[in-house]
Image 1: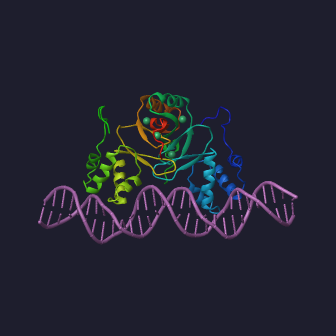
Image 2 (image 1 turned 45 degrees about the horizontal axis):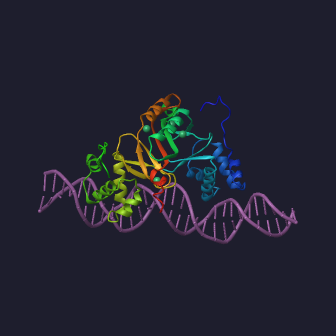
Image 3 (image 1 turned 135 degrees about the vertical axis):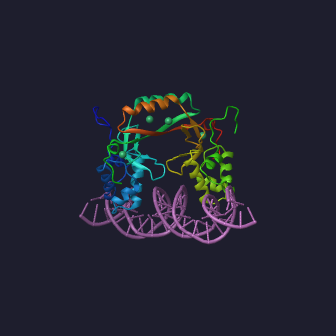
Length: 148
Length: 148
DNA sequence: CGTTTTATTGATACTTGATATCAATTAGGA
DNA sequence: TCCTAATTGATATCAAGTATCAATAAAACG
Ligand SMILES: [Zn+2]
Ligand SMILES: [Zn+2]
Ligand SMILES: [Zn+2]
Ligand SMILES: [Zn+2]
């Protein structure tokens, strides 16, 4: 979450669709603008609620395109709809606040090294991994988020 | 179903329900027997299909009880119903074959140590984590599993 | 610019996974 | 055995997400 290093490789959502050869339409623009304006994780239904002028099908389709293009991460939530967050760095993992649901990204070279070293211990060929860290975020720890 | 090595701390499914003060009924027994007989991960719908004599609601309720008791792991699958597997060891992670869906368990002290050490790098208080390793299992690598 | 072509949209219906309801049944103790 | 509370399961309902397809809008063409 520090940014002393150069800008993260934030993939522009519009560019992501363009690169897939998809047309720029007003419905899609509305969805992308909504996603970029609030830079927090969201569910598909949240977008639908926030964008009543855009059809449900289009919201779902646009999300699928973005996930497909690697511009959005889809992260599975036990007991509930998956959440989506803008993919700011190439490979990374997520922190999820168990209280407010806030999603963050992190990268850690040691984690990746350990994952790679696991090859010897595991039957079969490793092709990928996924990891989520559950936290109580600083906001929630400081009691800022009381009203539910 | 081999058990030449010592039994892991397998939590008996019946005991798990008993400890929750739940009655032993024929419907529940059918579900538990089905889960234990095939020691592979499964979905709720698979159980329903395999146990037409047990009501759908009961299947789902029984699974929920077992997850609640810690006897089953619920693991979220992107694009699909969650899978369940018997929890044989206290804290562990899963390997999932990307080809056939086979689920395995593993534990690795280094992984846990790294996860613990992550505290300094992450905003907020860590309360847990989840991790899945995606593999191509040996079965699938050896081409044994061709027919789909 | 107007025309043509093709992708996109979105209301609707549907699918799937899962839960709520509640009368009938059953387990287990007195 | 009888009593009572827990359990069951058919059914309805909910929720997330997809398929359909006529109407619409974007880009390409001239
Ligand atoms: Zn929080
Ligand atoms: Zn990683
Ligand atoms: Zn496999
Ligand atoms: Zn762990």
